[in-house]
Every structure is written in C-alpha cells, then in structure tokens.
Image 1 (cartoon, rainbow, N blue to C red):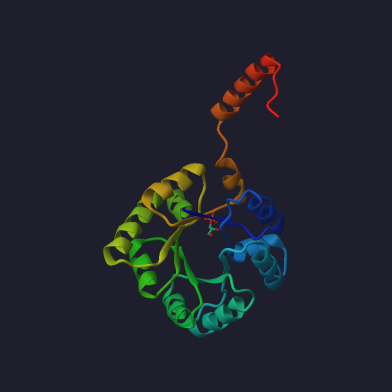
Image 2: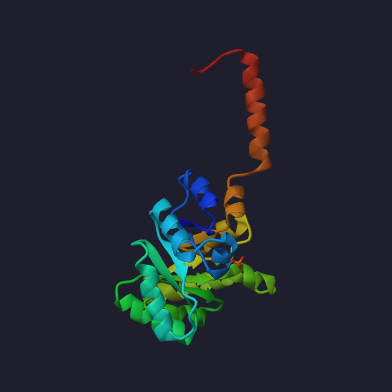
Length: 217
Ligand code: G3P
C-alpha cells in the first residue's frame, strides 16, 4: 500500500519523507492556501523533495479551462498528477488529459457510481473522501469496499486513493478494504507508529537491561 502525505507544508513533507514512509503527496486548493506560498513555487519544491506522485488540483470548473490548467500544472514537474473534481466537466477534462498521457487524480468522490465514471474516464487515481462521509454519519469505509469490488469486477486499473483520513484506524481499515493508496495528514501519519503498550514495553526492557550493566556495541 502506498502512503501519500496530504499537505503542502514543505517542512512537514521534508521531515516525514526522511522516515522513508512517504511515497507521494496530495494537495488541494485549501492546502495550497494554508501554505501561504505561490502555487507554482510550492508545487515545484514539493516535486523536487518527493520523487513519487504529487497531486495538484485545477480550480477551473469548465472542461476546456480545466484541461488548460491541467496541462499547465503538468509542466511544473514530471511527477505532477493533475487533480480534477468529480463533475461532468472534470470527467471530460480527465479523458482529455489522460489521452495526453497526463496522470489524473479524480477527487471529491462520495459514491461508487461516481468512482465507476472516473474509471471509465481513464483516471489514474480516484479519491473517495472517507472522513467527510463519516462526518455525516455515513460509512466512508463501505465506499472503499464497494469501489474495490466494482474495479475488480471489470479489471479497471484506476488506483483507489483513500482520502479525508481522520485516524490510524482509517489507514488500517483502508488497507483491509483494498485501497491502493492512502493519503494521510501529517499529524495522523505520525500517530501510525505510536502505541502506549509499545512505549511501556520498551521502558521495561531498557530498565531490565540497565540492571545487567552490559553493553552491546
Ligand atoms: O486530499 C483530500 C483531503 O485533503 C480532504 O481531507 O480532512 O479536508 O476532508 P479533509
């Protein structure tokens, strides 16, 4: 399973990349706004920092201008993946950009019918938003399971990129549901390795080792 980090903060990406656990990055207009940076500059910097896929979202809403913006974004770096919203215009732009050989991440997906259309539009990635469905009392993880079943039924190659991740449980559940990628906010990514019993057990091991007076190296 690939781990992408969901942020446009260079310091966060740099620090987390050093763990070797970051396979790519996803951004969106809100994350770019939060970075306070020029969109082209920060995307170029992210693409130089992380060799894996970096999702950059168009902001136009009609297919032609989405396509123009997508082509502009794709020129920033070879690892740019163009993000388009799951609208009819977004699907049209996805087909055109995919025909150009540009990888597309279709985002803001909230049901399996939408995901089916994205696969038919030759999307490289589909981004179902788990957390925002959970926030409404719906089962976001069920959507991942349904998309997995549908894509496997028809051998679609579009990769399921589980997004809107709120917890380590979302990450493990997405893996169980068969997502290909999970994009994780930095704070959640840091929590993945943490468990109080690990800390307690390590403290106990080290306290006992201290009593031996021995060293290993
Ligand atoms: O990549 C999509 C992600 O940024 C959305 O997350 O928490 O705003 O629903 P969230």
